[in-house]
Image 1: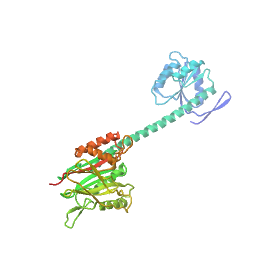
Image 2: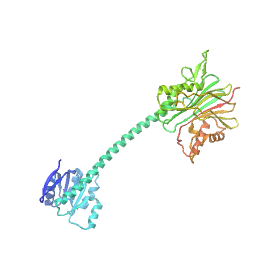
Image 3: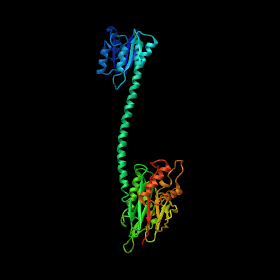
Image 4: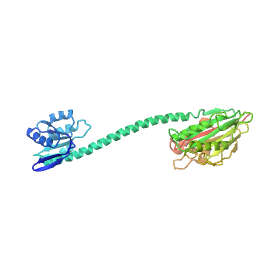
Length: 423
């Protein structure tokens, strides 16, 4: 409906109706007709009611944008009608103007308090009626814009919630799949037992631990920490697990065959260099990772390892004292010219080797301090009598006490090799 020019009392008024449907309530038929004439000329659809009770029934059956109601009416007066009307359930706001001959401020304040939006003093002047209606339309326009924006926000939040639930289900499934990368969490190799710990800080993480059999006397070990904690990191751990899984030379990059066709371990440093080239040349990703990779010989008690930016290997001796070994090294996936060297550590019967990601030694305490190697050594000494999963449970409990939280800020992972020795 466009703008309407109306000539009233010698003046021309321009009215742009925003409210479309108006209910006029008055026990005086002549007063209703006078107001209806004004409103019809200004382009509104008008419905009349001769009493508050009749108006209330109309409001229950249909919606109005604006109500003009006389205050003094027999039966249900304008105030009572306004109170009852405001208690009706509605998904839109209706602007309510009371028509009255009352001018006392207390009466007006009471009317506003019970739900009226404005007042007009009778007899009603056309110019004032027009001004009050336009003020009401501005409020209705703002209210409906806000309602529409709230509706859009509500719909968007619902969509986001649905998307989050779907993503949450996918991430939970991804977590299960990532946990399945660690096919065995414990194996008894006779002369040595190997246990694994993998606990992500979120749905999915960037840590990976594992072991693989090489021969009757050799065990492969690895501990990897991929940068980040999201899906990209999890996908990288899956790719790396494929490189280091299996006990055959065709399946595992860390294995090869000698001239007799016997499966033997490769130099861990050379394996790190090969993986580094694969990451930089084939994957084309910004993700890098730290790694400790090697193998343990149960006959000699020697572990041959390569350290690629990973925390030092911890060796807990039979008496409970813990020593740390490592030569640092660059993470994998940073520069193509990186190279690494193997190093060896000697275990005696009763000793145990502990590989972990930095989620343990960099775990923040309640005062902001990190656990560091000295703190790990104390925890290892405290729990020196515990074995396998029992040691992991004790360490996680101690880390919770140290940090003051159960959900650690970083992934927690570890490889524990306990050397019994050979007869």
